[in-house]
Amino acid sequence: MCIACPYCNVGSEIPTDLLGRKGLSLKSATCGHPCFQVAVVDEIDLADCLA
Image 1 (cartoon, rainbow, N blue to C red):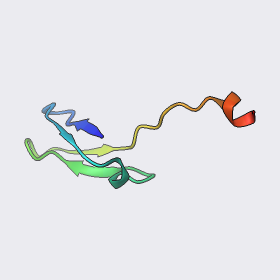
Image 2: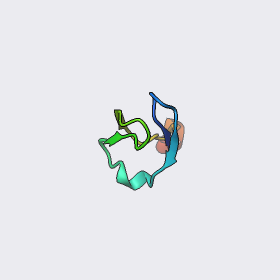
Image 3: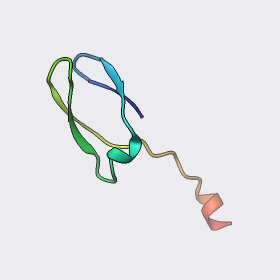
């Protein structure tokens, strides 16, 4: 998953499975600001679940 620091806007790539179900507290290696990142979940079409 590609993430970017909301303060310095520097991006990095991390494995999505590291975020877990609840997310993960991260700290920018560039500016040092902390942030919290959750995994992006694709939208689910309920019609597919009920079929």
